[in-house]
Structure formats: structure tokens, C-alpha cells
Image (cartoon, rainbow, N blue to C red; front, side, top):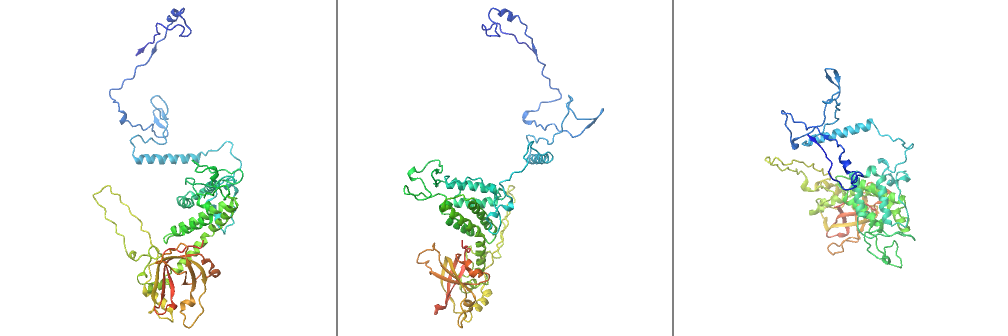
Length: 529
């Protein structure tokens, strides 16, 4: 196909290459070459054109190495003599399957790993000495909160600018970010991230929560930046009450009341995270909390006098939480012991209340020997998804029976007879605080053996107890418990613990002077935090 391009017969004056009307005739006499294009190749008669939607290109794929020809071994090449290069991985194509795509990705990742191993990237002017990293090793991340550790916190684990003019909540958020960065080796795991998230949510240590925050202190005090100011300058929130304006409370619970909020948080961990099946979450949570509050106190994020003293106390409370939890667990094991005095009293004289408590430390009676039956699946449904759930092993003991504990009761009740003892009064649920631990009473001729062998726990009503007449309980209740391992340091570690459960007054109806109280746990024993 021949194509020729001819110049136009007329042009605007002075518009083409500087030619004007005077030399226009000379311009038209110039010979312009013709452009010749080769003809489009014809399709051979034996071949057919494949439509685009059916075309699938796999790339140039040849066997690696040389091939044999008449002239001897040679590298593969195309019809024009261009050498062919073997592809490392063939392209999966358009209409590939899921298995082909995953296999292709796996080969790419494997090849990339091999390249990094065989050909490592080295900087031309790399640093001669390795700078100290702000990230700690996994085994060192929680040592700052361990009271028995000699750990010294490196100074590079925090770059927070401690300035009282910066709002306290801003300093707290920045310190939390530095804490996460320095403990990145362990805190980014799914379990630890979830536990630390519980701590931040409960104490409102997140900038996403709406609310007012205190400004900084000093002559250059800065206000906490908000999207929309909710107060005027005269009523701006202040860290301490001033005569000029009314104090506005801080939205962050940790800053508003550090000690009380942390005590409640650690109590919540004992109630919500602890379970008879798995004790690991609550221990991990207490370990993370101790490290976090010790980190805040170590770098003195809050130099203000009232906050400084409070956070030093908070760090001390958090570091002792694990020990307090173990002591509460030990007391809980004694008061819930199957052959213990308190549980035996309920098994003998409890009547309808002699069984296990709902959500208590004992296995429900209806669960014993019950085998879960799987529902049969329909065979006709081809798309039905078959799945199984692994049963949770309930490690809680079963409730004791009358025959098991009656000999124990007779022995500790002697010389009195058990046949005349009745349940005189029952408090369905009460939460009571231990205020004193007393030794056994001196031996007497008519005194029952349990009063001369068991220790006494003096309890008072919890401030949160109901004042209704039907739930009214005595101001002071004394329960008798075994002193195995509890009388260390006179039992002072038990003072402050909280017993939660059912309380019963046992004795003779005719002579109530010799009556005593028995306790049956429903929930866990709260530590003395």
C-alpha cells in the first residue's frame, strides 16, 4: 500500500517556515519524498485466529540448559535467532484455578527468600557501630514490673518530652505509645494485645474517647487540642481548683483517680479473667499492668505533686498484684475444700442449699456423666459444612456428699451431737471484707473441737451491700477456717480480702448461743488490693 503526502496548494502568508507570498511558488516546487509502508502479512490458510476471550498466554517457557541440534549443543532461540530465556515461574494465566494461584505465590515467596539469602543487600556506607535499639528482647519486656528483678530500664525506651506545660493526657498517650514500641516483641501478639487493650479501654487511655482533659501547668500551660472547644477560657479545666473557675473533671479515669481506678481494674481482672479452666490470662494481665504502670512511674511522666505520688503508689500496687492474687487463690482453695469445715457444714445441714452454687467453684450436678450428643447431619445436603467443637474439660470438683463429709463433721463437732443442729438463717449472697484473723479459742471442756483447732476470720459488710430489710446482714460475721499455710506473718496478708457467697447460721433452735456461721463460696475470693 503506497501512501503519498502532498503539501497544500495555499498557505497563510508568512505562516509556513518563514515563506511569504513572494517566494510561495519556490516553496511549491520542492520535491517531497513518498512514505512507503510494507503490506500487512496475510494469515496462512492452515491457521485460524483465536478470539481474545479464549486466548491464554503462558509466556516463554523452555527447558533450562542447552539443546542439541545438527551443529551441536546450542542455546534455545526463536526463528529470528534471539536467545530464549527460561522463566523462573510460568505465569498462571487468566483462567487459573485457586490451587494454581496459591502455588504461584508460594514459588514467588520461596524465590524471594532465596535471593535475600544468597544476595544480601549491603549498604555502601553502612554504620560502623550498631546503635542501641529502643526495642527490648522478649524475655526483658516485663522485668520492669517484677519486684524480684534487678532490671535497669534503658534510657532509649522512651523519647517522651516531660514538660508540665503539656496536657497530662497528651503525655500519657505519648508514653503509652513509647511503651508499646519498646515492648513490640511481645505486646503485638494477639493475646497480649487483647489484654493490654482491656487495660486501655477500662481506664480510657485512648484519644478516641470523647471528653474533657486537663491542660498543662505553669505559665506556658497548653490546652488539650479538641476538634470543638466545649468551654470558654474562664471555665477551662484545671489540674487543681483555682479561685478563678470551677474545676472540670478529667475524662480519663486513670488521671482523675489513679489509685482507686487501678485497684478496681485489678479486682475486675480477678473476677472476669480468672476461671477454673485457665489461670493464665489473669496472670498475664497482671504482669502487663505491672510493667505498664512501673514504666509510667519510672520516667516520671507526671511531675505534678499530686499525680507523682499517686502514680508511685499505683506502680507499687500493680507490682504486688500477682502476689496478692496467689494469696487469694490459696484462701479460696481452703474455704472451698471438699473436706473442709465450711463446705462440710453445708453438705450436712444445708438442705436445699447443700449442692453447688451457680457459677461457683464446683461442677453443676446436671453436668456429671452427661455426654454431648451430636446432631445427625443430612446426607442429601452436599453443601453442608461439617465441623466439630472440642469440649472444654471442666476441672472443677463435684459437690461433696453427706456420707463423705459426715465423719469429718462429727469429729470437729465433738463433744456436741450433730443431730440437733439446724440451719437457722441463710443469707443467699453477701460480699464481706476480712478485717481480722484470730487464732483458735483456748481448749475447754464443753467447747467443740473446731473452735479450738480452726482459725477465725472476722468479716464486715461491704460498703456496696444492699440496705434492704430482706437482705440485711449482721455487722460482723466470724467464720472458722483451716489455717494450713495461711498463718504466715500472723495471717495479716488475709486482711482486706473479700469473701463472696452464701452465709449460713448453724446451731440448735433451743440454744442459739452456741451457733456459728458457715461460708460457701459462689464467686472467687477477691485479693487485698
